[in-house]
Structures are given as C-alpha cells and as structure tokens.
Image (cartoon, rainbow, N blue to C red):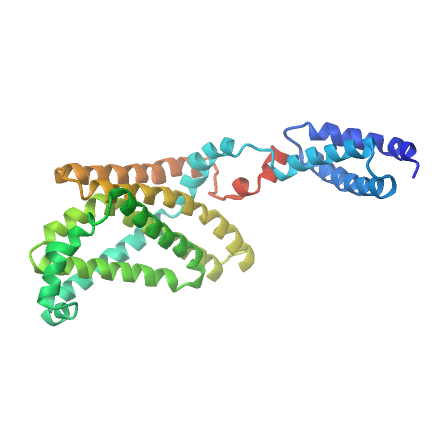
Length: 331
C-alpha cells in the first residue's frame, strides 16, 4: 500500500469526519453523513492496519472514529443533564396517562376489600377459618402493631421498600400476561379486607386504620399505578390499533416502564414513613398528616405536572432517555 497516496485520496473525507465529530447537534442530513463517513472510515482504518500496521495516519483516523462514535452513540452525553427533563416532563406525563386506569384499579380494590370484610364480619364461621380465638386475639392485640416496630426502623424501611418495589416492577413486567395483575390486586384487596375485618371484629378497627393510614395512602396508590401500567401493556397487545402487536408492545412497554423509576422513589418515601413515622410515639393527626402530604405531593406531580407535560406534547416515552444517540444527532 502506498500510504501517502491512500491518505491523500481520503483526506477530504477524514477532514469532513473531523468537522462533524466536533459538532454537538446535527441535522438529519448531517447525521446520515456522519454515520456513512464513520462506516467508510472504519473500513479504511482496517485496510491501513492490515497493510501498514501502526502508523500516524491510522492513529489519527482511529481518534476521529472514536470521536464520531461518541456523537452517535450518546456515550459522551452527561446523564445528569437529562435528569431534569426525565423527572420534569417524561415521568409525570407517563403517570398522567394512567390516571383513569389507576382510579379504576383503586375502586376495584376498595370494593373487593369491602366485600371480603363484610363477608368475614357477617359470618362467624368464616372468621373462625382464619384462626382460633387465641390466634386472632394475638394478631389483634400484638402481631398487627408489633410488626411495625419489631425491627430497627432503617432495616424495616429497606425491607418494605424492596418488597413493594419488587411487586410494582412485577406488575409492569408481567402485565402482558393479562391475569397476573388482577391476581395481585385481588390478593391485596382480600388481605386488607380480611385483616380489617378481624381488627373490627375484636373492637380494634381504629387501630387498623391508624396504623395503615400514614404509609398506606402513598404505598397503595403506588401499587395501583403499577397495576394500571401493567394492564395498559396488556391492552396494547389485545388492541394494538393501527400498529402491529410487536410495535404496540415495544412502544407502550418502553413508555410505561418509566413508571417503575418513579414508583421506586414513591415507594421509598412510603417505606420511610412506614419505618419511621407509623411506629413513632407521635400524635396520630401528625402521622396521618405526614402521609396525607406525601400523597398530595404525588398527586400534584402526577396530575398537575403531568397534565402540563402532556399538553406540551410529551408522550411519556423513554426513547429519548434510553436512546441518547438520536437526541444527540437530531438535537
């Protein structure tokens, strides 16, 4: 190989690659040109190294290719610079689009839980199926309240947070199965309804609500949102509209999985309340007030900030967050 002649023949292309590599934003034509130059440059670098080994020309071309690759892969982007857009626009938009389905899940949970509670309270035989009188008194007088203080607050917070976050992630990840989310919701409603019925049967209904309310308002709402996201993914498969099922699942699944990130954070807040506030020796109005403020903040973020994001044209999709290449190229 005549390296000087080869370099002279491709100098204009390499100079153009260098110029594009220094740009921060690109038009569509420039993006296509950058990719084409990168591909041809990679072929030319391979030829140089095969024929001439390590050379200054090859080293320069290698640097140019590395710079170009950073531009269209997004590896050079500062992740932290994307966080304000994600938390200020994309996540609240995704939550806002789930508002009515979240309400439907909440209503179903309340109705099913209420039916189980009424059934259990209305039939002593049903109540007896959940344990002997001594067992139920142990639950009512000790186990129910001791659960919140049996472990150090920090470790208990971590335990309930990871457990609830895992349940939320499963609701979204396995939502496509159709039956998974309804089973989780019905089981949760049954457990809450039966536990409440037992507490009321032994005159401890106030204790039940006082210990559930501080953290339960935000915790249950977060689980309802996760269930709504899972059902939405399933519906994308059932009724994809003009899209293929594969496209619908990919688009809606990617968009709705952003919700997992938000729910991990909201469940962390509810976990902190459950670990540090619920068992604290504070007046109950203070503890319930803290839980109510946390829920109000979540609703403002979901409904007010989310509405503004959707009106601004945000779809709640995570494409731009996950695929940094296109954002960096198009600008």
